[in-house]
Every structure is written in C-alpha cells, then in structure tokens.
Image 1 (cartoon, one colour):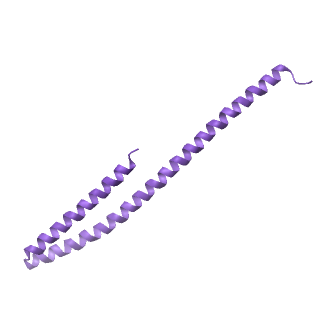
Image 2 (image 1 turned 90 degrees about the vertical axis):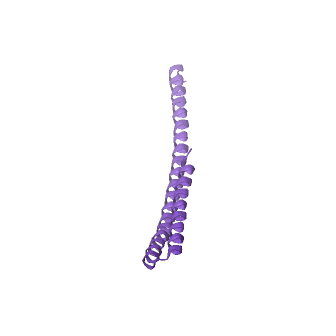
Image 3 (image 1 turned 90 degrees about the horizontal axis):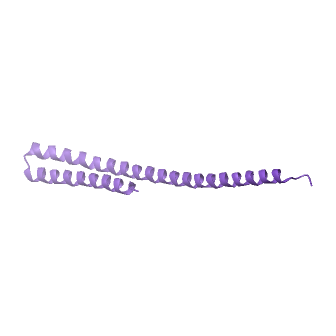
Length: 106
C-alpha cells in the first residue's frame, strides 16, 4: 500500500485541526447570531423610546402653551394643573429611560 504511517499520522493530525477549526467557527457563528439579536433588540428599544419621547415632548409643549395662556389670564388653578401635568410627563420620560437602561443590563 502506498500509505505509510507518517502520511497517515499527518492526515489524522490535519483532520483534528480541521475539526477543531470547524468547532471554533461554529462557536463564532453562534456568538455572532447572539450579538446580532442583541443589536436588533437594542435598536427596537431605542426606536420605541424615541417614539415615546416624541409623543411625550408633544404633550409637554401643549402643556407649556396652556401654562402660558393660564399665566396671561391670571388663572392660578390652570397654571397649577399645567405644571402638574408637565411634571407627570417628565417623570414618565425618566421612567421610560430608566426602563430602557435596566433592560440593557446583562
């Protein structure tokens, strides 16, 4: 037979190296998919937060307009209501940001 023990041993060592590299590539591929899924989750969370902040900012701007009108009219009850609403909306923004931050903690 044309195979000798040295050639056979070299082929077996080569196969072991290929198997090892294949296993490492599999791990990298799994890790890459996990990273990509995490990036997708982060992008979704940031997009949701941005949409929420835009909506809340619109609400704050409306309350500021109401506050200005109430101030001009000397309506202290309306001023108090607008200030309370602005505070609640701002607190919601802070809570949304905190929730996003908490969701990103591994």
